[in-house]
Each structure stands twice: as structure tokens, then as C-alpha cells.
Amino acid sequence: MANLEQNNTSADQSHFKIPDIKFTKLFINGEFVDSIKGRTFDTVDPRTGEVIVRIAEGDKEDVDAAVKAAREAFDHGPWPRMSGFQRARIMLKFADLIEQNIEELAALDCIDAGKLFLWGKLVDIPFGARLLQYYAGAADKVHGEVLKSSRPLHAYTLKEPIGVVGHIIPWNFPTSNFFMKVAPALAAGCTMIVKPAEQTPLSALFHAHLAKQAGVPDGVLNVVTGFGHTAGAAVSSHMDIDMVSFTGSTEVGRLIMQAAATSNLKMVSLELGGKSPLIIFDDADVDKAAELALNGILFNKGEVCAASSRVYVQEGIYGEFEKKLIEKAKAWKLGDPFDPETRQGPQVDKRQFEKVLSYIDIGMKEGATLLTGGKRWGSKGYYIEPTVFVDVKEDMRIATDEIFGPVMSLMKFRTIEEAIERANSSKYGLAAGIVTKDLNVANRVLRSIRSGIIWINCYFEFDSDFPYGGYKLSGFGRDSGLEGLQKYLQVKTVVTPLHDSPWL
Image 1 (cartoon, one colour):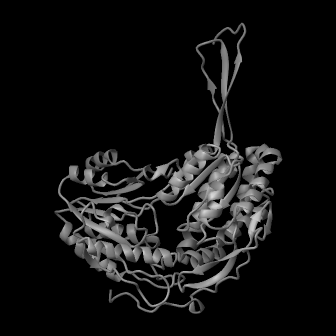
Image 2 (spheres, rainbow, N blue to C red):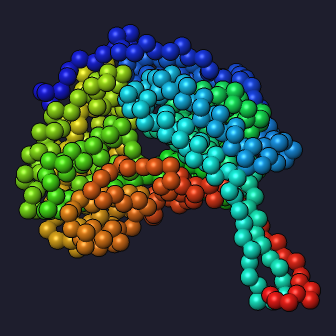
Image 3 (cartoon, one colour):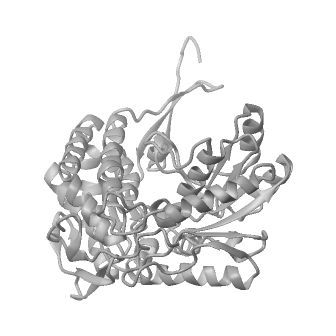
């Protein structure tokens, strides 16, 4: 990796002045408060491994307090009883405040998660505001329907907010995931508790502050920072939470389902892991396909559940593709995520950093060939070189497990049938990509692959109107789009008899 810049930039040499951290306490019933037990935990800058600040550590008692506030706000407060238009006005003001604080929010996600500051400023944070605007537009369009009965009955459906929702969000996209869950739940008239990942609490607390400024009533949006095995478990098993929406690992998703089943049978929506295939056919533009494949695994340092970690290239262009891919990987710039030239920052924390490196060791021990990368980059922080393996077999752990880092398995295929079979061999089914100029090939493959989203001649193209979720062990339920709103609504059927009606 000789062409990679080899000097880590320390926090005090950053290209951007780090903002003061304003919010470190739990946000419950419209106020920032200490945890009941007074405990705190460190949130760490992955660029350096140094502590940024200490954050209030919420536990079961704090979740109880947040749920009590949310339940009161739902059962007796104004939010569910407002018209959709009234809720929309507040949500639009919330979006405006997000846009007014873009730089500070992008900086918080940068120092907390190692995300690229420029990308956060131009894409991640504006996308959060866009989600609020999108669902504000839908808030006054929640309609039931009149049902046509075969008997003398008049029937129709009402759609009502599901109640108190627990949102458990991941660390890889702290702002985007916050609003993929919070925005539709607000539009539906729900109240909620948000448990951000312990690695990335900073922006969630700032969002809570802005929600209060926008006029979201007290108790509607509560944020309890803390650990998954304590605060997250308390949300999942709480008897007074009506639904849990979770994005994260399949292993934790199983625990949440178990907790929901053994508590009050609350509804569950899960967006879980992925091991997504990218299939590149012989007619592809090799240069563009290599860029697409590399971005599909290195974007956000590979910490993306839909990352194209399994790349299948048809044998006719495989040799040329491999050379082009390695050329681009060696030119990929790592460094300070505040530097606008940087394309890859650090892994989110030491634990994830060590996990990715352990999978690289596993890949070599199982017989895969390391084509490039595979090592720590620099001497400070949690950076890992772009890593590509070849000679990968489908049963190797680097091909079956979600690594969640910048590690690609590059494989060769001959026929369409082989590509489809190998793409579907994974236990996951979150995303897939197809690169071809042949529409018939694209249609055949996309209808054969069992994944929640499939990109044709592109990758990582999202929009607020695109439903996102998985098949198989990638979970169930959808975020974004109108499907993302419907899951926060209950359907109530109303029936009255018809007397002496001239028609049914």
C-alpha cells in the first residue's frame, strides 16, 4: 500500500475546528437529566483512540422513566391528537433546524464514528432533514379505506398510531438511521424512546435538543444513551412499549425478538446484517465496474450492512478487472476524515478494528490469497488498509460472515446460472448489485436474487422514497418510503349495519 498517505492527522491538527460538546445527559420528558444511578461512559474518537467526553449511562430505571414520559405523552398529550398538518409544521421546523446545524452535526458524527466530514455535510445530515420533510408531507395523508361488503354492512378502516415505540439505532450512520426511524414515527403520531449506539451518542442528543426547539412536545421524543445489554435490553423487554424498531446485527435481532415475545408480544421491525453480492458481467465497462465495486466495499470504511463484500466477475473480463481493482485500491486515500481529500476514515472503535483484523487473519488461514491490504494503516487510531482476497471459496468465513469492514472477497464465475446460485447461497438477503448492458440479463438476475434492494449499474443509491430492508437473516420490515410509515400504524376495522339501503 505504498501509495497511501502514511501519516495520521491528530485531532488537534484537524482540517476543521471541533465543536464543543453541548449535550452529554439523557433526554427525558423534554429535559436533559443525569442517569438515575449517576453512571457515565466514555465516547471515543476513532481517529486517535482518545476519549472525547463522558456520556450519561442509562439503565433499566432510566428506560422506565423515559417510557413513562412517552406513555403519558401518547395517552394524554397533544401529539397523537394533532392533525397531520399540525405535526407536519413542527417536523418541517425540525428539518430547518437540522439544516441550520449541518456542520456541527456532521462534525459530531465524524469524531464519534470516524465518518467523512464532507460526506456528512453534503449527504448524511441533509438526508436526515429530507426524511423529516418527506414524512411531514405524508403526515396528513394517512387514510383508511371503505370496504365493500357482501352483506348489508358498512365497513371502513382507520389507521391509528401504534403507540410508544422503542428505536434502537446503529453506529454506522447515526443521523440517517435516527431519522429513518424517528421521522415516520413522528408523522404517524407515535411517541418514542431512542437508544443510540453506545459508540455514537453525540448527534442523537443534539437531535433531541433541536426537536425541543422545533416544538415537539415533551415526552414525545426521548433519548436514553447507554449499552445494548442494559438500556437496549430494557427497551426490548419493556411491558409498556408497543413496538421496537431495530437496525443492527442478526445476533442482536434474535435477542430482541425473544425479548418481545416473552414480554408483551410487542411488534418488531428488524433491519439486520448483510453479505451482499455484486455481479459483474463480461459486457461491463471494466474501469467503471472496478470503481463501483471498490466504492461498494470501502464506502464508510466498509461499515455498511449493504456493502458489496462478495464481488463476482465473469471470467471473460476477470483478469483485466482484477488489475484495475488493485490499481484503484492502492490509490485509495486514507486519513483524517475532516480532510476533504480523504476517502476512508477509521473503523468506529477498537473492538470493530480488532474484529476486522481477525477476519483478515481467518481468511489467510483458511487458504484465501491476500491480493492487497490486510494491515493496520498508520500508528494511531483504528485505520485498516483496503483489503481484497482472491481464491475465496463460498464456505470460507470471509465469504459467509458479515465482517463490516473494508474487506472484499473477489471471485470468478462462468454462467448466469452460476452467478445466481452463488449470489443466493448466503444466509443474508439485504442487497445486491448487477453490472451489465444487457437488459434481459439484468431482468433475469434481479428477479432470481432474494434481496430487499437490487441496484442495476449503480450501487448505494438511496432515497427517502425507497423502502429498505431484507430477506432471510437480513430481517423483516422496511425503513424509508411509505412502507416505513405504515409499520408505525395500526389498522382498525369499523363495521355498522345498513338498514334499508338501496344498494350494498
